[in-house]
Length: 624
Ligand code: HEM
Ligand SMILES: [Cu+2]
Image 1 (cartoon, rainbow, N blue to C red):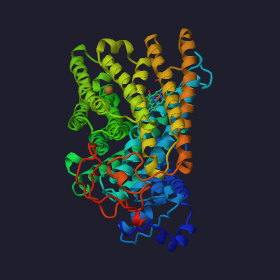
Image 2: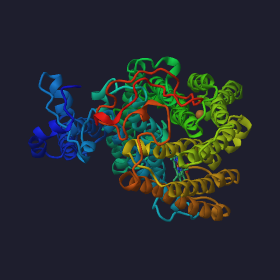
Image 3: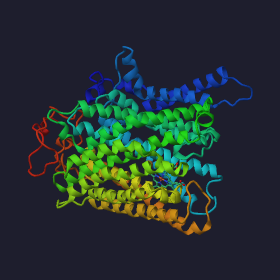
Image 4: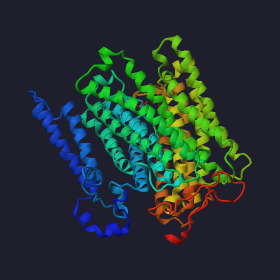
């Protein structure tokens, strides 16, 4: 850690070196290209040479991709920052203290957090653009902007894959987790800063891979990569498997790092029953990731091997349902991986905004942990149309059970708001909207857990509405709450309350305008994965698309507002919310060293019964 300098003086003395080199991101791209060309050529032209073969074959592109990703990671800085010191060289990697630090390998958790935030934002905008294209296509009952169904389906797949694996899974743990958790627990870094610095760069690589997949050919499986269907797809599916492999690896590394950080790097006095709620959420999600991501990665790997070698894991050897089982064994916990950070945000923000002690804190934590335990027992509710009646009961039962610990999260939130002087500002508004939306998502989830309803609603837009209510309604709305809440932390500046509220109401109307109607559309018989549908559904689809564009613009509006206020917003003090948690007890934005000295925790962060601070050595401005 100490061998790599990232402060001003260090930057100046080694400035020459940084200047002479290509910008790391450009060098990374170059090394990726070289790596790909060498390995792809070796495999397709030398070792695996066949008559009349194309230059890019499935095995060659796979191995070429591995080389490209390694080249990319080394190029953005893992070479000087990680490999060279590993082999005994000196770590001569210098991170300048200006905007360039965001475009290279860094070991500062705050920089890495920002990089993750930008990466998932990029994924969100790209996948959101794909959603706009899909909604455009669905405005008419026949094909009109795509020229074949495969192109539409590839777009659906890219949208879902990038949203799930680069936004849903990553934004709140890689972004806000990396930035906020060490500050929150009174630490100056994460446990494995070097690994973390590398893992971030897998996200842009993974997104690019998925987005480029159509170059290899269309794929029709959606975000799930279903075998044996995938086995009949053109080669694009190879880039699906590789892309999600990169993205899930990144999340896995974040989870290892955050788990170790929360376990071992807490400030003195920060006992288990004082761990902040957001950190609890991050710990729970990390454990979920550690359990389920390796499982799905092996599944993807088997899918990949079936596609390139081919090893017929899912056609001749297994049953056609094998992949489905393996996918949803992970796939259902995935929705909790996405939404547990949102629960944690509700519980983190509401006590601060109401200046009132967190209600039933233990139950909140028990809820998170039980969600984690039950999450793996419900997967077959995604397969009710594929199994015997006698198998349905236990899965239906466990699915409905999960609403109980989920309900704890609601009760903690509502109990905390009860009789508090809730400040109804933008973050609070987003939290309230998230509670409302997630409630609709949850209730319709209970409906879908009932096999009778499920058999009717399966693969219709009712399901699309349900899961967007949980993911956008629950997670994305909380994500925005987090952006507005921690903006003063990142920048020392405040957003504009009026425009913030306009932004919140805008996306709320757009969101409900789209997705509430999707329930009705589904009940009327609109199926998923079809660009062509019966004409009686056309007027409704047309109108939903208009709301869809409104929603897309609303998201962009909020990001522009945040970006603008980041630079131009009014300067506020270090702790504008009068919060007791530790991240607000240091300067905003934090200096390179978060805390000096490390604070001593002596009380509860969520006890607002008096104005005493929870730390013995709060930050004082004199040293900066
Ligand atoms: C601007 C907001 C959005 C709109 C208008 C939108 C719209 C759609 C549409 C039309 C589909 C295709 C349904 C089908 O034919 O099967 C879809 C699928 C999907 N969406 Fe979204 N979506 C949005 C945002 C999101 C977000 C934020 C996420 C997650 C973070 C997400 C995750 C998914 C997933 C996982 C699928 C399934 C894809 C598949 O079947 O492979 N969406 N969305
Ligand atoms: Cu599920």
